[in-house]
Length: 309
Image (cartoon, rainbow, N blue to C red):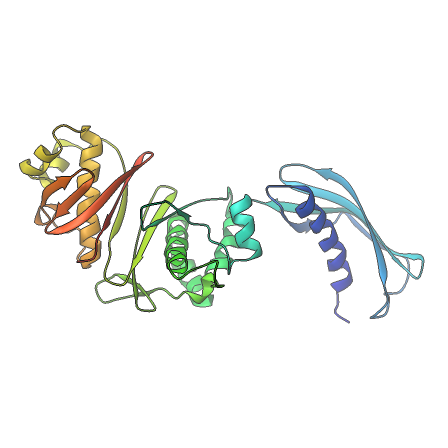
């Protein structure tokens, strides 16, 4: 005896059809009813009600159907023009929406310890659904405090942190809900999750995160030209000479991300790039103020992450 439950069940049947019929954007939620007609009293609790759904239209953004609900062999209710909105969901996101405790949005790569997260949605409404899978009540309040322009990157960063921790703890072998992972900030501004040290960085529509038993640092930057003034402030002649045989813009980006990764690991922030000298390079691994930092080109970006000291 719950008001509206019977009609909600009718809508669920329509939504199931979309899930079963489609391979992307499978989550459909009701947004509009054109006409609702009743022909008898509401069926009593426990009475079986037959539901017939006639799909009228299915396009990239919406599904539309008519419903008939029949009780005791008689038409009880007809719904014309029930419209569902289809939310963004590729296969990876669909798995997280269904079973967030067993799946992650983050991508992993063989031979590297970090995870990478990109957007699997195109609009704010779909992002809201993902946010509710990953953030607990307190974190949702924190999310609301972030300026609108910054929420996209903030959420990607939180997803990356939680997936990095969950994957390091054997997600798949055991269920771990994202909302179970509580992210705290230590006095140096570094993220900590239940004793595990984590670091996160985001650029454009990409976020990366790393988890370790000791303080770690990670950074991602877009490969782009640097001004002469930026180069003078940030890099010594010896650092530039280490990459003299390399493509200039990419080398500048590797130097910068490596320094940023160490600054994040130490919790100092990048106050003076020259105070973190790059003294050696072995392939794509740099030595920054005594710390080994691995760097990797990923499309238009360079990602750098530290080894524990």
